[in-house]
Image 1 (cartoon, helix red, strand yellow):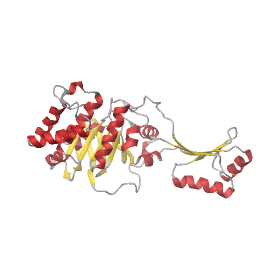
Image 2: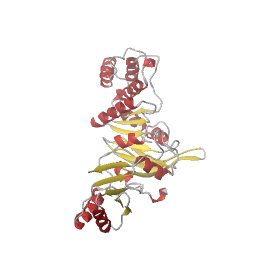
Image 3: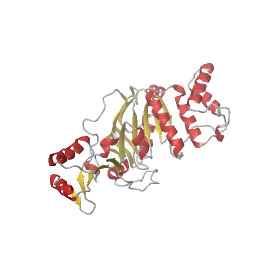
Image 4: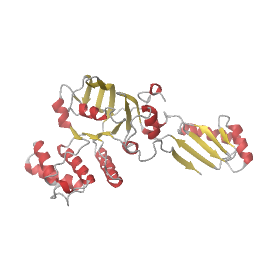
Length: 342
């Protein structure tokens, strides 16, 4: 599907909570390669925002710009109410960043890593020890606190990494592919940590290679492709952009099947299976329309199944299949999400 037909933002879908992060016309090039070509973002406070895109799409560059690590070539941005260009130091005081590669020092203990971060934040030693102990307990690392971080598992190191990020009590956290390389159990643990952060009022800007992760966690998702935001919305809104969704009705009585086919002239018939396929975006309104037609005809299906595209389908449609995300140990085109009502 050509990306030109995709709206940048789903009309009327944007929440109006105060923005923790906003950007207009953000641009960045490296030599003659344009990485960001004028992107706009608005991330409500206390939410999870996920930025998806093929490898090399500019996700990490976006994080680096918004966290003041590299300057933008153009555009304007505000983070935590501070202008990115004019008040970079104020921005740094309000954010935490966990990059793709762990900042944990394996030569010292988990506790020492935490105390080092407290020193960098100029927190008094006694207060720093209190904060370190609380965070180590919160992240299930108290027993391992006195052990060298080099002995930690990948999941433990990632938890320590985020705990270190929280030492300065940031209200906005940038997580750049935080679960890459983790086993499924550790990944689910990280998801729970992220949910708890948001419950406490923290805003999370997440980049991820795992479409399931964005679907599970994000309040809003943007797909970055060719330096632009190809589409943005909730997971359900994005799924409805992709064609292929349909309602499947199956019957056991051939006469009822034929009556339903007459009542639903836009359906595709499968005479062998006594099934009808009706194009649908999966919305409640579309499903109600189908059921109303059946009620008017006085017929009832024996099985109703709603098939909706998933984020894999959205990703491939918006990026023309470029840069298959890292989670696709599954098939490149995963099965459509199904919800069956019997």
